[in-house]
Length: 335
Ligand SMILES: [Zn+2]
Ligand SMILES: [Zn+2]
Image (cartoon, rainbow, N blue to C red; front, top):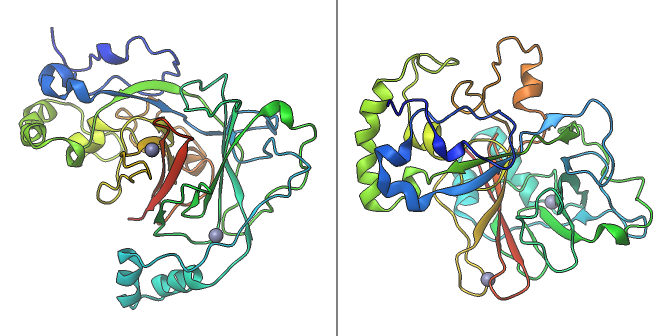
């Protein structure tokens, strides 16, 4: 039986959206050593809502289930600790980068934007602290382009703020929440969650597996047709097989830069909780069954939410709850 197009690993997912096509070939049969590295990811597939969603829904943007007794928070993080990215940018003479550096250096007081809200009954896999059933992620729309910090006391870093809330404690919802900012006209999005399995990109695999990856070229060469959106493109294990693009829970990171996994205060390596992507899949036939061609609103499809992390890049939320209260850390990578 041909392995091409078959993928028993994703044949029985709990959440089915039909958005992810079968893998190009069954990587575990071709390279059995990769099997122990299989992880579940939940692709969220944010899609623009056609009408306002309830405040307590799982979603991106819109009005969050935030109590009227709690003022909407503002970010006043400034002067982040020295970072190689900033030092490099300061040497760069381009006006755009200089502007970004100046913006980071300038103290600000900016209302957070409502980013991701998740319900416990829909996503029980999250590391819910006792009593919580609503995860809320806010992000500062000012530039925190090279954020890479770990503040285990406040859960605030890289311009992010995370709240684990109990829905029933919200008696009245705060009506005036994050104001619209001209740079990011955000669009409320619903999710079409989908369980898939993922594998580490080559940069995260042990040397023995990494050395075997070039041997996959024969399988890639047998694939026809080439990528629908880019017929001349080379197939790449890390981006076309290993880790899915877009906004997702768990799984393996699709790194924009080098692997950057934070260490918790307890000394353990933190685990990937959430990837927020500036844009969603642009690989019909590889990472999406939806063909982009007949879609009139391609921008709506690839950039449904409207926020840009870094330079059209990704933000990653990590966590550790190994025998202690949950700690989180956020990282933004820029291309
Ligand atoms: Zn900020
Ligand atoms: Zn820890």
